[in-house]
Length: 135
Image 1 (tube, rainbow, N blue to C red):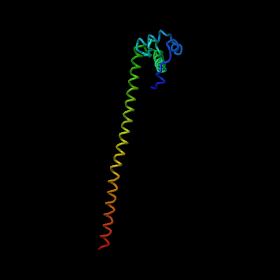
Image 2: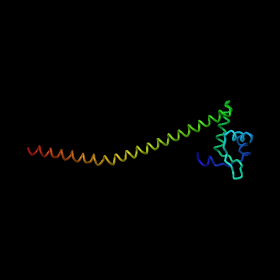
Image 3: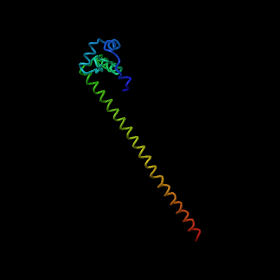
Image 4: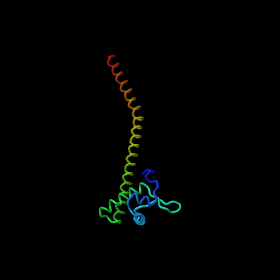
């Protein structure tokens, strides 16, 4: 997630108005662990675009009839799936990097060997040609 999405800029009243909910609803969601706004040094809540996306997800799920405990579990599982996907993607990137490095190493190691073989075979062929003409 980019810092632009997580930069907390909205005070609770503005955030509640943008989201179309009462500030108390936001406090309840925070108390239940569904939202985690940043706090200023004075303790005021500050909400970000990421918080707005989370709130939209909460609203979607509750509109589908899921209770808050269910919303919390679903969102925890969705976060876990996202984390696992990112880990898997990172492993894939690491494997591709490793494969490319191995391929480069084999090319460095095998090209001289293949050149040596070609020179050897060429010398053998020339020797056979001179042996045949000497007879």
